[in-house]
Length: 273
Image (tube, rainbow, N blue to C red):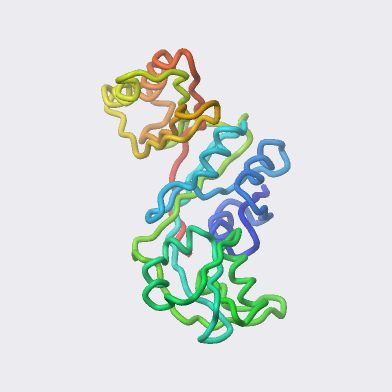
């Protein structure tokens, strides 16, 4: 089995993907990852979907809405950010926008005069730090060691994230034909195709009446017109359960002018390395 995730090597996505496959390739965007699975280029894709500090990764939500793929697994990994550079002084901190946000308090307190540069991934920021002594990166402490003759970086500070509980959820996507109803959690996308008082309440009641706990609900613009939304819903039940199927059936009736897409049921794995 092969997998594709955000690159280059050394990203937190790469760490999560190594729990899925030994053969891991890289793309520069979540959309490209999901499309590469949808068209059969790769068996699995690993995409970040939610961080405990910064919340949902909206590009992942939108990509899962547009592509014909299934969610087959969830991986949760702790995020340990370190400040990596060639020297103690630098002019720029480069990292993924989420990493910069997750370390906002530390950077504002310790380096208020240093510029921040958002790049495609934490590993890309570390690469910038290897190439330019005036740039520092934010990444896992293990990324300080240079590979294949690369420059070793100094670990100037560890665990600089604003909260020690910092963790990220990754979803493992597969071709749509591999969608399964087995697992302790499920994800669906709901497009109501309508807007009236009590609509969202009706959708939520379909789950509440059957004692199905919603672990997350997120609204995203549908792209059809301003003020038109769809909902990403995660709930703690597998689609093999009668209560889950009944709840989703009810939602389909409520949104008969729209649609419901079941992304799949899956189990959660915690990766700490």
